[in-house]
Image (cartoon, rainbow, N blue to C red; front, side, top):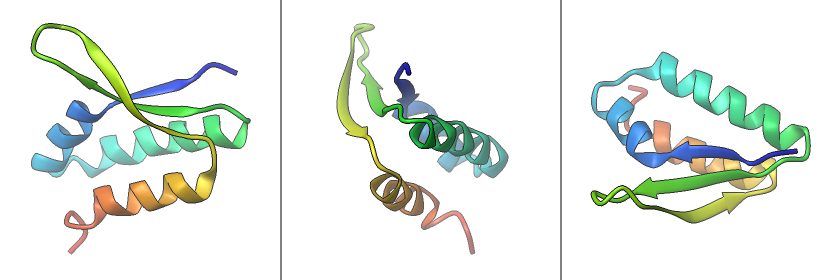
Length: 76
């Protein structure tokens, strides 16, 4: 199965505007990839157009911890 790439810049944008439905959809897709045996990779894009992977998730527990941190300040 292919990797599911998450651009953390997009997550940060959605956090700022409190776009919870978009975050929910992204995390549901990522969860399906993990359950299917794939890898979820976090990628940051640089201003010069390059990007780099700085974290990968291969199990649901680690991914759920990351997800909780993303939602921590959004849910009141």
